[in-house]
Length: 437
Image (cartoon, rainbow, N blue to C red; front, side, top):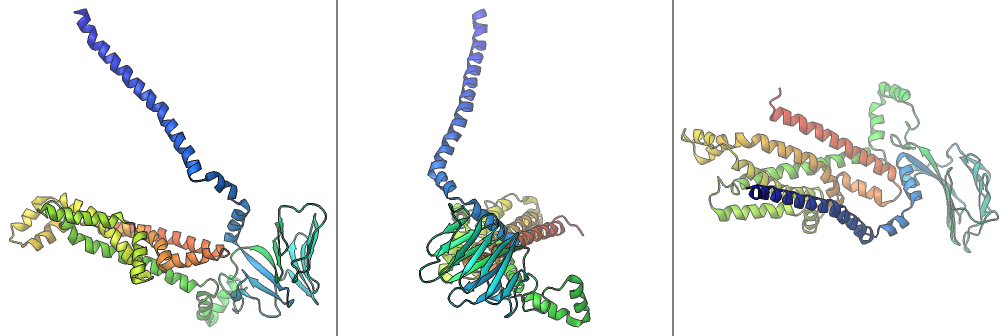
């Protein structure tokens, strides 16, 4: 009796020990597997080379360009002509005979004061840069190269020099000298010419002065100068945002309209034939299994670029997603409500209209509004491919590799747009589904 009673306890003890050993092996093996994967990813993605090629200086320049602007003082080394422009753009050029306050013109000598004792001289003989604590760098650009002369000793890291190009980057600014051109970049905080360009009569005016002019009957002219700003293009940006929202709207709600009737053919309680259900479910899987970006590329080849192509790409992908969600919602409807409508002698179409749709409407609206909000973000990326919306302007600004303040501007607008769409969709859900007055 004692042996028989002890056997179950021994079996339980053995199983407990085996379970403990398995858990301990998993606890040991899991970190090793994760560590092995991280080591594999380190070399598979060539992370060491990526870190070696990373440039903190370029990163710092990009960040600085996002919240400040550069004024270019450019000298044509062949003609000796000097020009001044915000961000180096023709639309930001100073009028002939005008220049920034920190530039002094004395005969043939143009002196650019970068602050802190940093002075750049453009003369008939060439270029010189007085750097406090280092000395003077001079150059006589010509057919033989830059012909630069540096103070004695090894060149510091912030000077990059070759026969045909010299770049000097200091905390005060940047000077680039080539055979044909010399450029001084001076950074200043803010987004210059954001409101009015240099040729606008309202440039440089304070809020009080602008308000005074607006009250005196110039409000329309002030708005026109701001809205049609040649550098920041506020009117074009606003229309690009509208195009982005339209892409998301047409794609999302178009998909909902297409998917709803098709969902009945994929629902088990509305399509008794298995072959029909299988066919439409696989169609939904195919549509939603192909990302909207892939559809964008395919449709761009077929129909050409444009906002409508982006809307169609969203429509195809969301038709698959909505078809699956709608069909699952239809399979969970209460049959008693349908029977109640049927008892009145209603035909099948009316039974679906009054017995099914009211039950699934809250779920359908909630999903459609959520996708509309999400697609507003996706339309930015799709627009970059199809050539429409704010995505196109964002891509164009990034390609220039210099208009990072505009990139920041567009990103801020996209974030604000997402905030607005999130608030709007939440408010609409509460009104339509929650029954708030």
